Length: 298
Image (cartoon, rainbow, N blue to C red; front, top):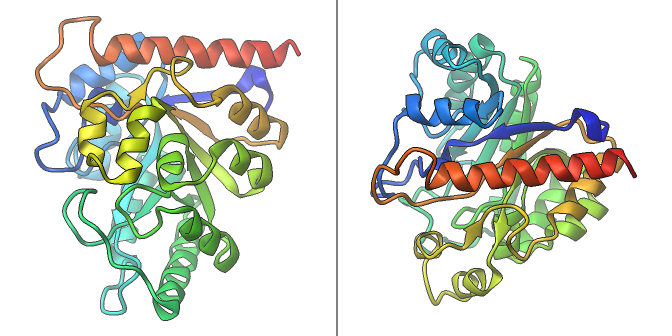
């Protein structure tokens, strides 16, 4: 990917749309997609199950109505239990990918608990082997349908910490979604990850982070949800993450995936037109476009 062809997409969570029960006010798909289009974002992730229609052709039509290309989406699934087979649910989800043309399945290793603030159990060696086996099965099943499955290290999941990420790097061949915010909170340096493992990155979620708040989440002083309420994630270029270096490392490596602008938000009420998440997303779009232009001229 050259800097001139950087692919930028939106994510409904930037508008406060989340799969966690009680996660603030949920904006409608029509408003979210309309505002994405107004910002010049011609593509989006699906958002949580139920945000867009579940029936594949209806989901494709909802996106097409707003001129949006389907990127794929965040798909939490249990992959560490011997008595649960994740593949049927994955294959069902892939039906909507075929209908909409989406090409990236963003997996998170769900714990089985509700939300992201309940302490998980640690896996033993046998448990990790189950994870690795399921990741390979899902990766191969997706690839057979022309879809790239990636693993998203995420707060409150079975793959969260720097040690977890290293285990997956060493124990599987699946590629990653580099999420700058979740990696930082989990203890992985996203700048170094992009430098050292760009060949394992096939998708990215770009967040900027207020590290003072993130440190409180990491220490357990406040929950992940509370961190989002307090403004842990901020528009790109206004926080403490060296997003420019990450983008530069990925582009130099030949990365051809999406740069998804994802600022996890909690919305308490329907915002005024042009305010709230729209204003933040606009700032992030302008930032990533300026970075791409700078790289194109360097």
